Image (tube, rainbow, N blue to C red; front, side, top):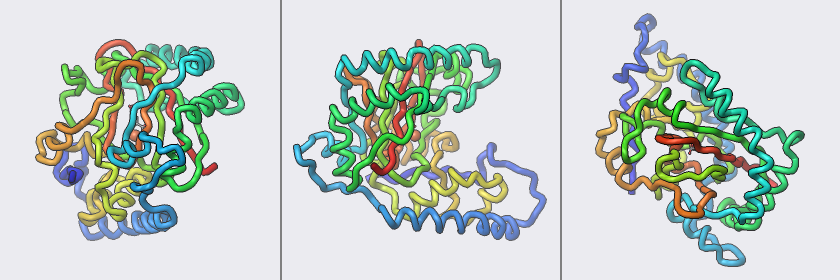
Length: 311
Ligand SMILES: O=C(O)CCC(=O)C(=O)O
Ligand SMILES: [Fe+2]
C-alpha cells in the first residue's frame, strides 16, 4: 500500500514569504478561510463517498475490474469514429499549436487546454459520446460510480516539445524532467472521479503519455482527500497555507514541491505506469489516483479531455 509523500512546504523555497505577522494570527486567518470550504466539500463528499471497488457490470466488463484494482485502463476508439473525431478537432489543435508558437514565455495551462464549446462543436460531442458508449465507458462508469454519467465538457489539450522544454527543461530517457516527481497530482473535483483522455495524435513514450501510479486511487482517507482538494480549489495566500495545522497543510498538486528522493516518492516512481501502447488511444482513470502527463520529448501530443456529470 502506498502513502502519498507530503512535501515540507514550510521549508520549500517556493513557499518563502516575508515574516511580518505572527504565526498564530496567520494560522487563525488560514483556518477561518479553510474550514468553511473544507466543511462544504466534505458534506458533498459524504453524499457520494468512495466509488464501488467491488461491483460488476451486466456484461462483466474486465475494464471495470482494472479500474477497481489499478484506477486506470487503456482502451481503443473504433477507427471510423476516430476519423470523425479527427475531422472535428483538427482546426482547434492547429490553432493551439499556433498560439503556443506565438507565445514568448512559458505557456500557462490555459494556453494549451481549451474548451470545445458545445454550441460550436455539437457533432464532436455526439461522436465522442458514441465512442465512449461503444467501448463500454458508460457501463463501467455506472458500475464504479453507482449512477450513470454523461459528458459535461470536452477540452482540447496540446503539449509539445517546445512548451515542455520551456516549462520543465530537458526530458530524460525515462520521459521525466529533472525533478522526477514533477507535476504529480490528484484532481481537485470531488465528483465524479472518472475522467477520459483520448489521444488524437500518435502517442508513444516520447510524446508525453499520461502516467499513473496504479493503486493510489484507494489510499487516501476521506479527510486527507478532501483537505488536499480544498486547498487546490481555495488557493490560500502562501503565508496562510503554510501556517495551517499539519493535517490541513496538504495539497492535490504535490509533486513539484518534493525533492524526488523521499522513500514514498521512490516507491511510487518505481510503480508508475506509462500509458501508451500499440493501437491504444483512450485512458480511462480514477482522478483520485496519482497521475501526470505531457512531458513531450519529441513532437506533439494532442488530446481530447472528457469530463462527466450525472446523466
Ligand atoms: O496531461 C496529462 O496526461 C495529465 C492530464 C490530467 O492530469 C488530467 O486530465 O487530469
Ligand atoms: Fe489531473
